Image 1 (cartoon, rainbow, N blue to C red):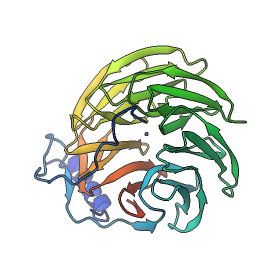
Image 2: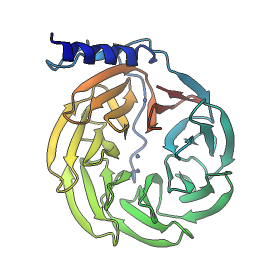
Image 3: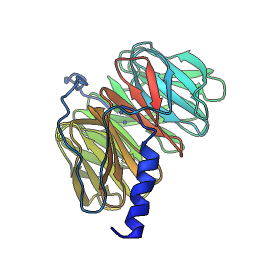
Image 4: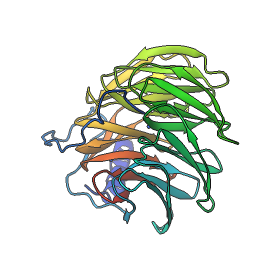
Length: 327
């Protein structure tokens, strides 16, 4: 082993010694189960990187929020959670995990996003989206969208909401005006913005690319089965394939498939931390190198959903509980 790889291994070891045991809708399909799956995969290597296995990890911080948190978003200083079981969102200071407040939204929220000034959360029961001022949690309005809204994203001027009837709805950020809905296929789950276009996952096996300016469909690209969470890394789109136990990397410019990588278990949410891709689900939280898809860490952490990076750490929602954890 040369000195360069030894230094790399040591840096990984230092990083993960502190770890502990992780953006949609369907029309007639129930929420994919987050039930525990048995873990039996040994640590692996791709010939260059040893996968860090953690069966009893210790998070940096665990914070009590509302019941059954799903969505997680970062506003530049604070972490926000969508508490599905409480009909609320919770604001947590990212630096130290201090809870700064909890605020009511619609019933059974799943997705949550930040538009640069406000927090938006879906209600999968009320078929609405609620806008809260991020500075103080003041309710700035509740707006109807398509049936069963799940995860959502912002493009800076509009909010895009994936809905269970197979559409994505565009709302104007300033006043919540509905600017139209676009058909993207049954089972629309989550959305992300790549700087020019909106990408939406379908729980079938494909993602749809829409031009953000006018909603024109630019393409549809096959990925794995049961695709769920989606994230942009600055150049590529990453998709968590819940039904295929994998993640897929697509080139954002043209949708070309750059690789599909094993993600054992049932991957759910996905986020980019500036260097690497983090994938939640059951029974693992996993870290992949964005450049080539090599798995860097596999942490036993069942029943997780939303994940977000604050630039230094990742925050993971523990479904079926009242907590989020910071790694």
